[in-house]
Length: 155
Image (tube, rainbow, N blue to C red; front, side):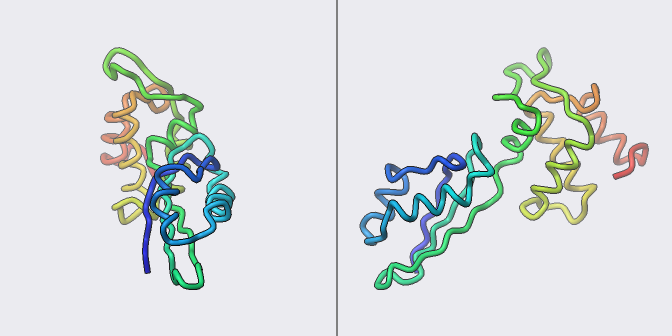
């Protein structure tokens, strides 16, 4: 079995690089593969999505497509409707999320995170919010993390 792993923009994969050069020599119908990828990733429009194309049998050209979860930063940006994080996190704020939005991102990303429970997942997403310059309910995400750890905020 041959596996081709790459990142594609949700719903906008093309037969060009990186997919074309990797899959072309295997004799697959690139148009169909790209169509299938775009169908499976259309809900992640505007985000980079990890995709793996497993060529199960090159002789029969049978393949499967596995779509991963986009990076936490991409999910946060989509949730807040922002294009990019703050360039200077201490001076500028890229956006403000509610704790519910943070929980929503944590839930959608949960399977790919290292945490054992929802509390840990929320803490991880808050870490990404720090990196992007996103506040949570008007507070610094580090402050919210402390409040969760101290039990002041229940998850």
